[in-house]
Amino acid sequence: MQICSSCQKNPSTIVLMDLDGGSVSSQQHLCSPCAEKLGVVQPKTPLKLSADLLEDLLGSVQQKASQKRREPGCPGCGMTTQQFKNTGRLGCPRCYESFRDDLVPLLQRVHESSQHRGRLPGQLQAAPPPMLRASAPMEELVTLRKQLDDAVRGERYEEAASLRDALRRAEQRDAGGDAGENS
Amino acid sequence: MSKKRRGEPPEFRAGEWLKGDGPQNDIAICTRVRLARNLQGFRFSPRLEADEAKQLTEYVVQRLAAPGLPDELAVVDLPLLEEIERTVLVERHLISREQATSKKARSVAINAEESVALMVNEEDHLRLQVFQSGLSTEAAWKHAEQVDEALMQRLPLAYSEEFGFLTSCPTNTGTGMRLSVMLHLPGLVWAEEIEKATNTAQKIHLAVRGLYGEGSKALGDFYQVSNQVTLGRTEQQLQSDVQLAVSRVVQWEREVRDALLRGSARPRTLDRVHRALGTLERAQILSSEEALGCLSALRFGVHHGVVDGFDVAAINKALLLSQPAHLQRFTKERLEPEERDQRRAKLLREILGCEP
Image (cartoon, rainbow over all chains, first blue to last red; front, side, top):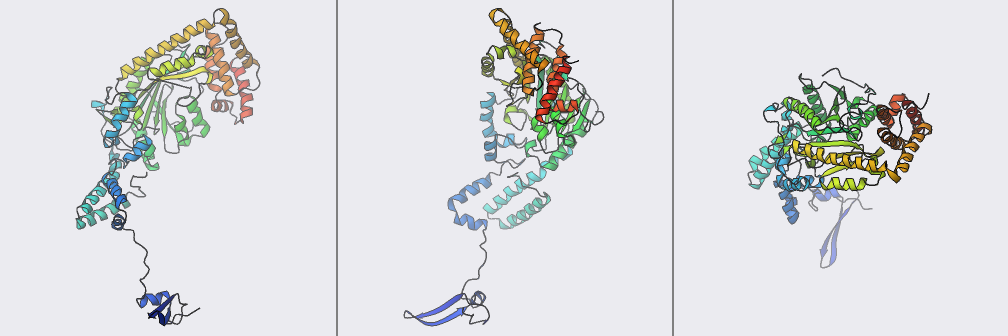
């Protein structure tokens, strides 16, 4: 095995040949670090899959993805329309408004009606509990994501950066918190 | 609310559903109202994380402690119970199988008569059940309404003007009410008309299920008939729908029974009853399915004077205690299935007074 002609230590992995009129005029054996140092090869960096890059790469998929982002699901629990359609179950009381368009025909099929005629708590209703805030983090995440999305779309990058930081903080606060879409 | 019944087994009274009184009790065992309710501010139960489930359960239990509930309820913290105790509650219809086997924080609050059971963190945050012996849809609904109002005053329930009470599954939305009547229909089964009755009920939006609800088998000729629709009709309308339809089924069962006890059908019917009694008196090994079948025939025979010297209350007790968890709980023995079937045969002889 050839030793790198530059550092004289590492085994060479690259052969640099100068061609002159179809024949090799000179030949140099280099190891990877030396080849990089000499600017002979591009340093190997892990490919960063930024969202922007992906969007550039995947034309049609990108369209779907941004549609999905425009539809962040139920602000109460993060459930998506697709999840509702797959399971036929709702995630939280607010889903009834979030998925109203799909829900009304379903209720019509099951009950032959979509209008309640029975009793309601009305005046009897108890005050909301202190932990009504229980759903706040979830809601905050969904709202922040939506704002971030809008900011990026509107190319307001400074605003987007601060929203991104706020989103990160909110996600950390929601300890171990799954932001909702998969929970 | 009184003291917590932590880990303490329920007593072996028959409970409201097997009390054996109330209108039409020879055929209609028990009427049950189930109301599905959810709280604002929480995701529905199936989507709650473990800590949220705990928070919800504790909050509800704490709010139930406020004075003025129409019934005094004892709270049972289900994860603290042994599996067999939870199965006992299932066999008594006080909790569902799903609630018995769930891994999350959950409770049930039960009154001493076992006519009210409030499941906390089942498929919905709250599942209220109210039982009334016999065919008594109106009384059952009135009682349920009272407890429901007490819940409304204590807990912020999720509802909308448009959709009514909001539930985890859209099939319960609106009133959240499932009104069911447990019926003993040996006549329709023996005359092979049960399928016709079931189909007729389904045509008018009633569901017919087995003894233990959805997907369960109709053991011992016991069936549950309930409303399927929960939205678009008032509770009173649903109640009178079920009352009317069930009354017709009861009437049908009566006519069939009369026919079975007349003319050429009579000997075969008497034979069925006496064979069942013979099995109960003599069999050494009885599965719970066979036991329920025999007890069903005996119950029929006692109501129609085919056999005498048996108390319907004893038969009801036997129906309950022949269930696997009750049997083991009652005999205070943990038994393998084969031993269980021997023990069951012996226990039934004792209850029915066939053994000295």
